[in-house]
Amino acid sequence: MTTQYLLAGFGGQGVLFAGKFLAYLGLTKGKQVSWLPSYGPEMRGGTANCSVIISDDPVGSPIVNASDVLVALNLPSLDKFESAAKPGSTIFVDSTLIGRKVNRADVCAVYVPATQLASDNGMASLANIIMMGKVLAAEDEETVKAALVKAISAKRADMIELNMKAFRIGKSQ
Image 1: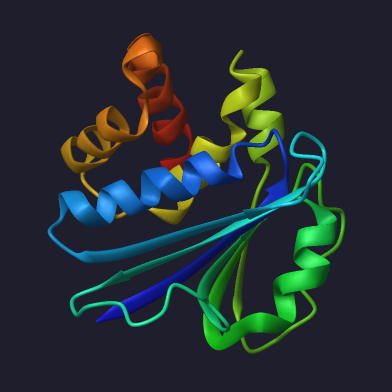
Image 2: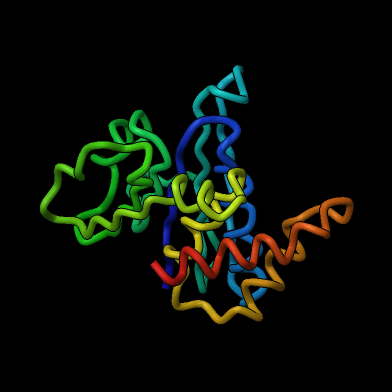
């Protein structure tokens, strides 16, 4: 089984971190993983996306041309990558920042007001993890925490519990 993820937004939204967390989650479960970040020269405020492939078999190429799961954290990302989602895939949309609906009828669209939820809960920088909570709602929390411990640097270890709280908020949506 192989799942191809594409996460996209603007720099500063934590798109690359969310992808790294997802990759560590796959590794924690003993899967083969590829993580390919991409960002514009502006970094903060510019475009950012990353491709993550989690597979039972070795990953031949890190490039995701057709995603099984698309996470769009801003409107330009949805506009750019919506057509690249496979028929039958799931598109997760931050409905706080994206005012339109997904235009395709052959995908499952899930709308999460991640940015608003983050703001309402005093964790403005964690909308990405709230969104990942919804994307990964079926995952057990021990595995999620193990992946967060790997993804968060040692100097930011105090953020692990806040990230877990953000994950739970997304999971409950």
